[in-house]
Image 1 (cartoon, one colour):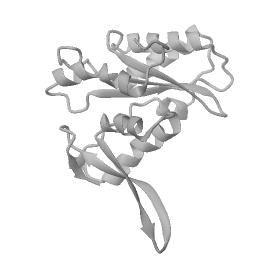
Image 2 (cartoon, rainbow, N blue to C red; image 1 turned 90 degrees about the vertical axis):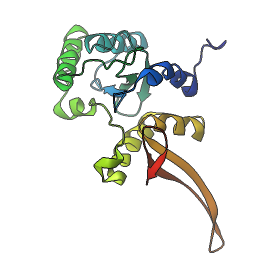
Image 3 (tube, helix red, strand yellow; image 1 turned 120 degrees about the vertical axis):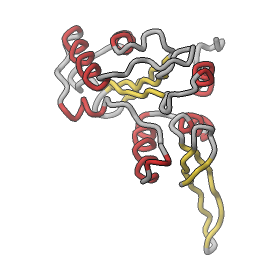
Image 4 (spheres, rainbow, N blue to C red; image 1 turned 135 degrees about the vertical axis):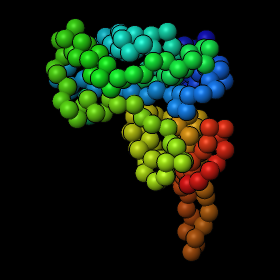
Length: 202
């Protein structure tokens, strides 16, 4: 445990490694969901933490390692949860009817904590992000569907941290710098990775 009690994203992701190494069948081992209370709901950090733990318990991931990140913007506080779909033995966690169970779990939390009922849009925002699958095609669209919410929801201290998170969604990232017509430029190039972390397209 860090002396200052602050975990960086690389340390958090390393706690996932034994589970990922044990996995040998599940194609999409990473779970990422968000909990989006109504802007009118006033919740303490302790309540938000309790809600995240209760949600994961109800979804069958209570014994899994997971990272909870609170994001604050002008509209509302909301939580992002990253976990794994495989247990320490490499066995896939039951995800049958996951969408329906997620809706039911959110409704229970709304009732327990006296929250305003979420509308359809908010419930859709809670759906898990999908890792990029090169064989499914439309790579640019798949990559955009991951990096857009991640860029809006996380603060990264370095590109290394950003890249580390992207790899669990089968996305590689490369920083490019140069000069064109006398003007310097810099940017990021994204590419799809296979399950071995090898570049397969961009």
